[in-house]
Length: 116
Image (cartoon, rainbow, N blue to C red; front, side):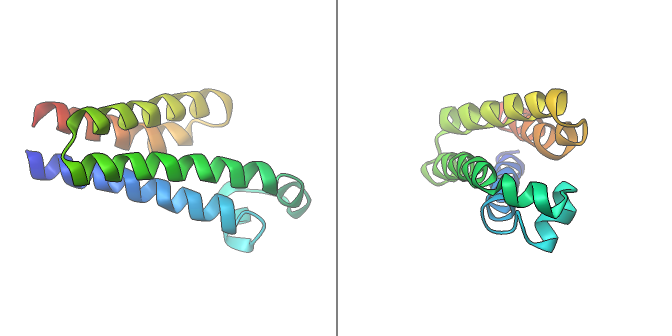
């Protein structure tokens, strides 16, 4: 079970690295605009906010990686909890898809960590 938990935590960390790259570097590019369904004008006007959001996703990924490398279950659970809360908030304020893309993988990882 520990191996599954580690893989799921690693997957959540990788997702947040992907979000970092999309939000910080591809927000105004075709890939970023496609993923987030953005009009070019809006993407350009909001790119600084998106970069800030991407940085926060990087902090989540770094915290999850730290928890994995150090074998600290409490750190993993803290950062997974942060991801779940962010995902639920995003689903409530932006779109339901965030619940499945962000919160669900983190909740599954959290359950696996608790079970291991």
